[in-house]
Image (cartoon, rainbow, N blue to C red; front, side, top):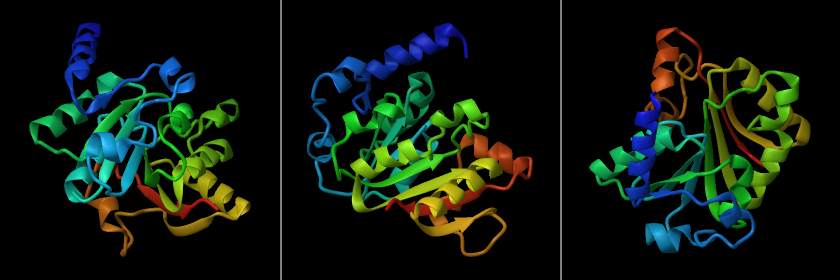
Length: 224
């Protein structure tokens, strides 16, 4: 994407009522106004609140929002030029139960309060295979602790990935730490009984992986 195009998208994001772009200072050093108030202030209802971490173009957040009008969704990514597409689609289709937050996932506890979140989706994250990148892996112990803080006690995490490495790493970590694995599948499109929301919504990259016949893996779990 050219820099002109990016700038255009950044500018357009600023005009979207469903996009929030707090500065690091606003989150870390001040009490972010939406923290603990997403339902009341933006969604104007008490429906369950679901996050998609690393939402990319936002297709999954928008797809889930259309599928579950009685839930609220927030797609999170540091790259605003990417989720511009999802935000614009939601506005064009008048999908009111989805918003987008531009921030680093490391700062998630500053954007949401304890027990505010019902469910988290992690869709096709970078597996960060190199050992020195382990700290950036979205299912490492540090990230799971962050999620635990903002999730309700019975909150659920979903990991959908094309990376067998990420799937195996996460399963091993979950079992080793005594977390509760509710469902695990190393090829959701081949094996029967896959949850419908896992196979009925596909991201742009997922469609490419499927064309290449790459297996898509899925884990659903609770953090103990």
